[in-house]
Every structure is written in structure tokens, then in C-alpha cells.
Length: 111
Image 1 (cartoon, rainbow, N blue to C red):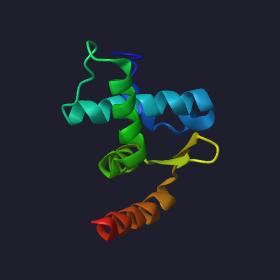
Image 2 (image 1 turned 90 degrees about the vertical axis):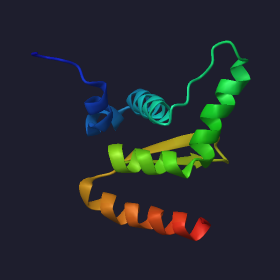
Image 3 (image 1 turned 30 degrees about the vertical axis):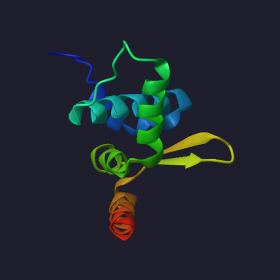
């Protein structure tokens, strides 16, 4: 099929991260894909706060999510508490291996 749009490939493309809107779209896509792979569904019959808590806790505390984003999409997500803002950084190939090793060390240290 010619011109088939692939959201997963777009989320991996460096150009997507050139704008804040593109980076936010990619983060949304990656988060949804991660939750699907874990079998987690947002129940529309529950209060909105439950969905917000699920997303927030995943972004703030779920080390597996950050590892998933780093390994599959080569993005590093950092939350700046002072500015209440997320930094979504698309990594170049040469930086990927270095940061992945540091993340693995950090996870092993936490465990």
C-alpha cells in the first residue's frame, strides 16, 4: 500500500520531536501502546481522576515504562518538578547505548 501512515514509525522519527506538539503526540502514542502491551485499559465508567492517576503514576514512577520508551522509541522522559513540565528528549544512536546502560544501573541500584 502506497503512503500508508504508520503511527509507530512516526513516533520513532526524529522530525516528530522538532515541535512541542509533535513530542507530546509521540508521548501520548507511546503511553497508550505501553498500557496496551501491559493489558491496562482505562475504564470510561470510572471517574476521570482514576485515568489521570494512572497516566501520572506511569509517567512519574513506572521504571518499566521509561525503559520501554527508551528501548523502543529512543526517547528519554524527564519531569521537572520546579517547572511542572516534562522534557521529552529524542536520543541519537550514539547516545542511546550510553543512556541505556545508565538506566539499567539505576534500576539495579533501586532494586
